[in-house]
Length: 320
Image (cartoon, helix red, strand yellow):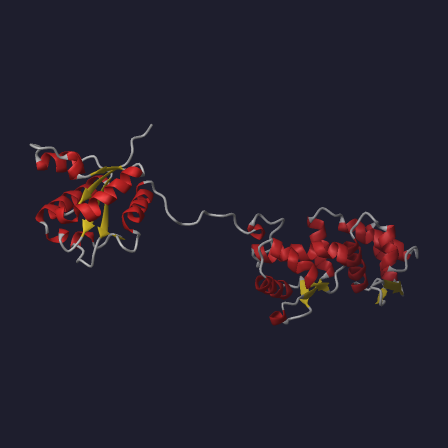
């Protein structure tokens, strides 16, 4: 079992009853072996032997009670000088405690001192000293970083971890909700769960839009509102990183449309059920953008295909 920390209380005799003794008692009640001359000195003892060889020597800290009276005492100054030398030689702690508006000695001016009144008198000062001797602080414990700063599923040059997490949120939301006009009531709560504020999300959306990942359909940040549309081509690339065989999906969708087995997006949902709806829509939009066919939207969110081009069949032959 380790020995308790030791502390020498340096003070003027005039400050003993009101300050030194209450502080030393408070320290001892909290497990600090406080050395006070009143308790240690017996008739016939040598002052030098007791104070400098037993009191200061081997102690962990010297607590200097500073008052208008003590700073003028040669004996306190001598104790302070010895403590300062030990502070340099063996990392002894010097802890000044200011009792009144006295002038702090030059040797202590670069140290952080305690204030008897502001720090709560004997009990408050003792608590602060105890924390110092045990290396404790009032600093709040270090928490975990926001979830979005944990290792991302993928990295993208030019985007930080938060941008990637917002992209991941939008993509995952699109798998069930589709690519177009993803509403804030879907993606904002998901971002908040990751520790991302609305303003941070809007900033990331701006970054993602600048790199062609999505379109910010609503820029009214003051209204706490957001609508985004995910780029179909980027959605397929993300799907690939999630383990979906998007090349196979493109071939499957092309075959179903070219062979006139499916004439709409909703029909494809039923025929290609092994893929999320968002990726099926992405494939349809990418292929339509490549000129394979024309797609026209309906009020219920469906897409109908017509005017299938020869290039679609040619591509299917070459990639089957």
